[in-house]
Structure formats: C-alpha cells, structure tokens
Length: 327
Picture 1: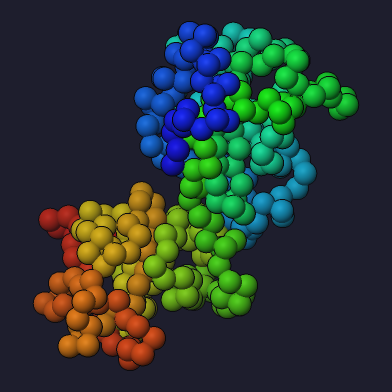
Picture 2: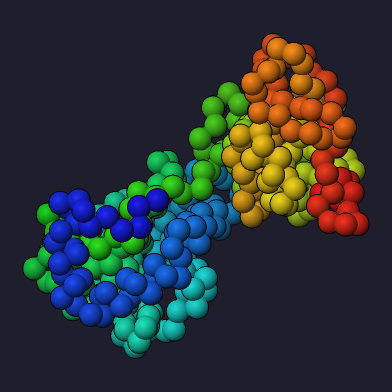
C-alpha cells in the first residue's frame, strides 16, 4: 500500500494545501493513525461490496449484476460501515466529525466519479474509490473548492472534481490492494465447474480443489455454499477438510498454527475469515530445495502436477482442547 507519497510531482499541490490547512492535516494524521496499513479500511470496502452482492441469498459475485438502486445505495453503505468501524461521531453539517472537524464521505466505483453536493463546498471530503475488477482501492482528503468542480447537470445539482484538480487530493492510501473477489477473478471454466455441483458441500469441495494457493474469503464460502451453516461445510467431520484429505488437499484457516504452515510453505497467509488450500505430498528426494513443513510425523511439500495424489496430513490443533475436526 502507498499511505503517503508526497515525493511524486502529482502530490506537491495536495501536500502544500494540507500544510496550510491545520484541519486538513489533523484529519489526515488521525485517519492514518487509526489504520496505518489501510487493512481495516480495505476490509470495510470488501465487506461492503459483499454485503451489497448478498451472495448467500442471491448467488451473485459480480458488481455488474447489482440493480441500479443497489449501486446508488453503495455510497451510503460505505459511509455507514466506515463510521461503525472507526466509531466516527456524527457530523454537524457533513457525515462525520473527526477530531472535531466536519468531514463528508463520498464513494465511487468509478475513479473520479464522486458526486459532491453543493453544501460540501468549503468542507473536507473523504473521497473513496474501490474497483472489484482491478482489486484496487484508494482513499484521500480534499478541501472542496467551487472552482475545482465540474458544473452538474443532474437534478440534485451534485458536482464532480475536475480531472485537472485531482492532484490536490491528499491520499491516505492510493491504489492499495483490495482483498480479491476470487469468484470474480477465477477462470470461467473453473467457476462453471464449481457452480455445476448440485449441493453446497460439493460446490465448496470443488472450490477448494480448483482454487489453491489463493486467499478465499468468508463471503466466497457463503456465496458458494448458500447455506446458513456454511462455515461448518469447510471443517472436518464431513466438511471440505475431510472430503479433500484423501486427495492430499489441506485447508488452512486464520488460526496461528495454520498461518505458520502457510508461511513455511511460502503460501499466502490466511487473514481473519480467510482460507487457503493446497495439495501436499510427502517430501521425496527430488523435492530438495522446496519449502517444507513437518505435519503428522512427516515432511510435506506442495505437490507439483507430476506428483500422484496421496492422503494428506491432519492439521494441528489450534487450541489446547480442539481437534482437527473442530477446525
């Protein structure tokens, strides 16, 4: 992520403006202190998009399938969810009060498409953009000036920031990674194979079989399973972990022990609410130099296409009393 980048020429105007505006600087500093890495902000955006898609009920995973009214409502949902996550106070004239300063919040799925109401002129705006197709997002601050805005032709007279003045936005995070919507980005043939299965359990098994070495979020699991007890379908005791073990496929969750396995195997580490699957085989002499992990009394490596399937290891307990069947 790129939290602050005032070295670039495009940020000279924004940094100069912020230095001359104590409120601007105070809000920027506070937001960055609340979320230095941008991970909390990114998860709010991921969860908001997933909330709108409502995959558990609708089976949707693509922004384009939203109704127009749902897309219009997206900005309000982003605003609400950010306020909940960061506990912003209600604003007097704008959406929030941050450090006692009124701040409006505007979201657009199209970069530069923020709709600024006339009453926001003179106020600070938190401008947020996220694109599920690019898996990127940005958020920055701008003190709205009338001369920086395009005249609006819509009925509510909302305005947009002129392209030549976007360099005045002070970015908190710019082109940062949005947690991937795996269903949207996986190959069409693999996606069709997943949804061709008639039961939620079979669809999840196929998902973890076909999407290996990538983070799979809880909402993807929910969308594929389309069942209230979707998390149970991942676990042992008849879930995907049990079903796929005979193929050597393990499914790591967000427990510390599982994260350590992913690290040792040089795989993406599952974050909160995420899973990563991989097919393993016991290490052979020709696997020398590959990342290895000790599990179930043996050394394991990530299988290559040439490695024949073999029953995989049981994952370690994540608490002093749990068994793999509880994971």
